[in-house]
Length: 381
Image 1 (cartoon, one colour):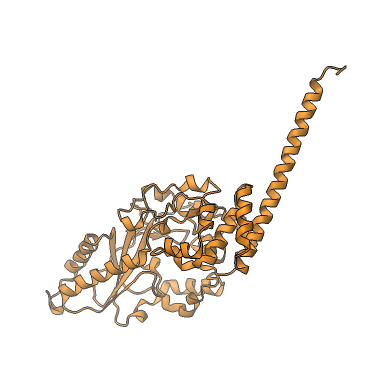
Image 2 (cartoon, helix red, strand yellow; image 1 turned 180 degrees about the vertical axis):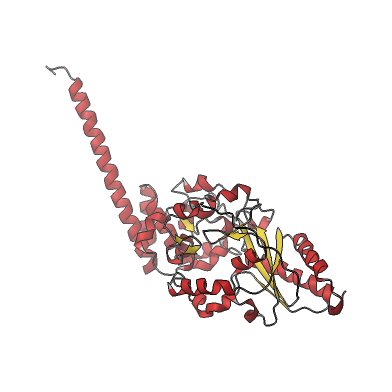
């Protein structure tokens, strides 16, 4: 144990990184609390309404760029990252099967918040044991804080054009967490932004939510539409959602830096209830009780059963015509809420159009076959 007057902060910073890795974090970085250069961009983003219905974003306003207002006396932010990519992720395999459900890969297993928060608290306790005195507070999406700019400043990577953090050795498939501390620790160096001229993430976005490099209009983002939005999904985005029922990974899937992505060793982040390979109809059949049971400990549970059914109804509407799907939609319609029923009606209308197109195509094929046969008949037939 060391008294405050005799702390070697260089050595302590290295110990903190070693302790963090021993606790299971892939990387630890340290930065100061000055995010003033991000305040104008944050204000402009809010003024443009890009936060949608996420009122808490506007409620806390510029506090998000001022960590020391969250914990007075804060001098440094210890930023941690933890890989979450599950084994056998089956990205393209599922996206190419329109009757299967695509769940964002971070949400296939257990909720990461509690796991990361507990580890950050353990890290804080190790620092206390060493220093005798420490004021700290852990955050994992639990307070208004700009975690990606902080992680970038702490040297864990750079913020890409899709607004996610990219690490040159690990891509972007990882969670971030922060520990605010009142110690004058040495800070880490910034990594150079290596996105260059690449705009793959901007081009691939199904709803064109990345309105300019580094700026995402949440109101257009599939993750927002399927997770944060509690009302009806706007008509203009429903077809683009495809079979994505909880979140979207397209901007990460296309990123060339994710060729270096590392799989997670955490059992908690591996897929549960076959969510990495399950049909839409199987999930649509879940009662509310089943939904609550099967999503216990999962981030999916926070959207509630209604939004779950809403999302699946849209995905079913985007699937190829199938009488089983139509029957399931019709059956669910009798017990669904008004909001879910609206999306079921849309899905049924989509299948009516698909059936008409299918019938028309079959009719054309039949007519072509008949003409071919007639041309081949002898003249006196």
